[in-house]
Image (cartoon, rainbow, N blue to C red):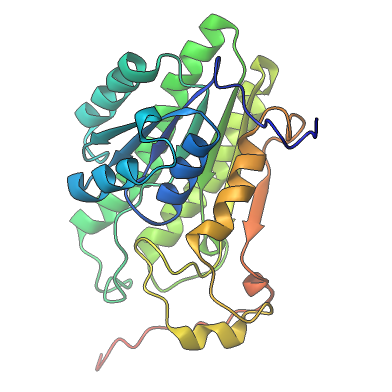
Length: 262
């Protein structure tokens, strides 16, 4: 039997994926279900998350959940629902993030949009990781967490609320990996490039900046995510940032935003 034949142990492992209604989160959640892993699909949009669960390779293993992770009450409700539906969550993927708008540059972003971006990405990511880890530690069970960050965690994007939230997540990955490693809980970051999915509407002309010559698709991320999540394949990988960008990070083409007449 090949090492890659059975990356997960469905009898003992279960997953929770946020942002599972579309884009990268959807692709990863559906891939987990395809491997036989019971998976909670969490999203803010009922229609898209229900459709994602139904379209999974094994819909009977997919549990849709709807709520806004900017709300602390919703985070607790998600944890309770996940425990009820799939039992102990061993694999957590945090892909949820509010939509990005080019008008939300440093002089355009409102206090509310700033707070929401940080609440969904950083606050929810921290809280869910910590509470899921508490259960794993108490049960002396291994776990694997994967947080979706961005190339713009280290490169300005003209969207300060987004870039700073992702930068915070990047450091959170390192903090959690260092703390939880002794408990056999691995924590890594997945760093997408220009992926035409979810909240990112890609200009096809962007492909000229990408060494592999094309925009990414959510399906480009899912196999890598599964490999990093798997405790059989990536048992010695933690605190890492896995870049999947077609080589886009080798260039930086962004110009400062147009602020109009100052």
